[in-house]
Length: 428
Image (tube, rainbow, N blue to C red; front, side, top):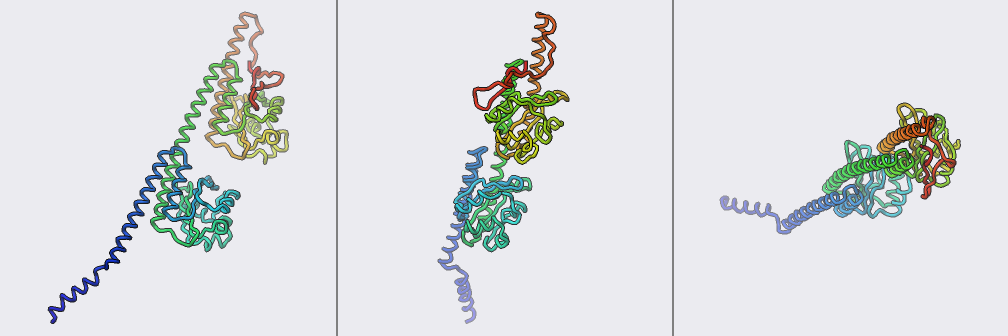
């Protein structure tokens, strides 16, 4: 009996180990679902890459495509992309965010709060996966952003994936669910992949923008040089061209080019200046008041910037307040015009909002200031040459005048366009 029992026992074990047809089908279904998920993620990644390649320098369609794919593949209710600038964040893109929560974000300060989940992801440069926002420490401590997320957005499970470049968070991709349902490891990995792609897209956009700006600057410089060459002895068109280029390249609302006689600044050219403010600048010389941009320049600074003139006593407690009251000026930056060690003038440009100028924009302005000094010297040499010819033909005394701006009765020439004025007889 025993020998015949062994094969029977083996057959019984084999029967027990062999999966049933339903189990086999379940395994097949799981593998097919996993394969379909992998294919969907690969397809989404490829589509995002195509958007990146087809939108050089334009991040909006890239962020939109990423959010669309992320929300669909991660089964999220809504999502956002935020970018980081210093200690502030900016909403760069959003999809299906509840209106009440979106209005809250748009109407509140954007300073990064280290107590919030967003702040945690940015400052610690790590993925923050929160199972239930309503049970988070941030919500219990009544951190404003966390409270608004739950109360206005109905947010429960949320995933923050930071965008890391050079060991710094430059943005965060965030997806939300309005029920308690954790994201899977594969979904988190997908969002990490999108975050890496976003960093590449942002860097490409930055490089392209810098290249375009450099080309624009070169073009502007060449165009100003052409004006200098075509207007020997006539500085009006030169100053106008310089200011127009500077305003366009630096994103400024209006600007002035000043000459300096050792005591006061006088407007030599005004571009896009509000009409009410033009009248003041056209008829009044400006002393270098302490604490103002022109005051800093007269004191020897290489450049001077006032982030908000409306909050500075140097402006608001003196006649300089007309900049704010009549011109609407807020952020101001200026650079000197120097011939060797002598201050001969300045360029100032203005924004009608509080938005400091960048280092690159200040460098652009300094480049134009150097060109202005060259143009002024060329005009002086041209006048001297003409004066020498007049001396030979008309006798002594016709030449030898110094390089001093002379002004018409009105001080500046009116342009036919509103807010423009320039010297027309001040430099001869």
